[in-house]
Length: 427
Image (cartoon, rainbow, N blue to C red; front, side):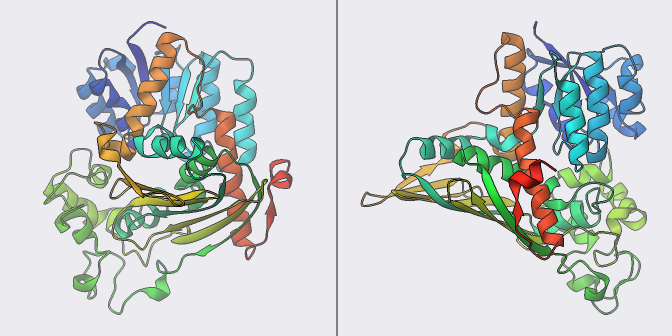
């Protein structure tokens, strides 16, 4: 395929705009030529950023996909439950596809897309971006080099951060599993995928526990009101106060930085329009009085087919948003922390080795460099007409992470019932 590869963006939100921005990183390889979004201001912003023609701007992904093929690749970055139907339309038009995770919270829908893709020449990549980070690629190399022997046990954490939980999973688009996905799928299918990829193992049985511990009406402090800016008497002491998170907080507020969260509240965020958004919109709601039903903490225990075990914890109640992992093998152990970007290898009886991941890559932005790494590798695959490699997250490979996450959710809502994965896959 001839460069530059042309992109059509279906959904110009946080993820769609991220993938579009790869045209700025790789202008010789990528050109954005079409955009669709239900928010007119987002379409206008994309049009101005990428000089998109008027007749290539659309009010919805469905309208765009109803046209004759407009680009080489369509990036499907709409809400979770829209992905499959839009993916089927894209396949019918002959697009190659960048598909934001999850594929769907409905396994029948996942199978529908798999079936639609059979017999086509379209390349589809599911956005499990962690596979493309220097951090996890180094871990992969260490494990598969045999430095710590056979992996017997793994513990891993995804620390969501209190402000990210409040933004995305209490006030935001992924707060309600009936509208989007269970949180363990939406947020953590990344983690299920990376754990399988790192270890090369297959899950046999799974159990899971978790709940919404804090973000409930009965946990609201005295004097709380439905909106933070509505005279709330608990506002000064509440860390979840919308004004703190979106305006004054040093790490997330518009007074200090333009974060991805600010750009969710306003296409072109300013102090004035952020205040307007939290005074009148969903992101100004009290975190104890929203229509959320997803968990704020969950633990998964997995028995693998070779008898090894993996334990994974997702939790909202952390200061920072990062992951860490502890890998224990018959010949040593590895600990790795994405906040510090340090990997420590201890082969039994040998001196400890520390690896600084910041020295392994010049770009650790966007999921530790995973966003740019994934898009660059996918585009190179198209240009050079290469076959998928061990990192490529095809529909089939991605499905295993979905089986595990959705089985974990079934276990959780059934008091930790042990789920046999073979039986679950064959339902």
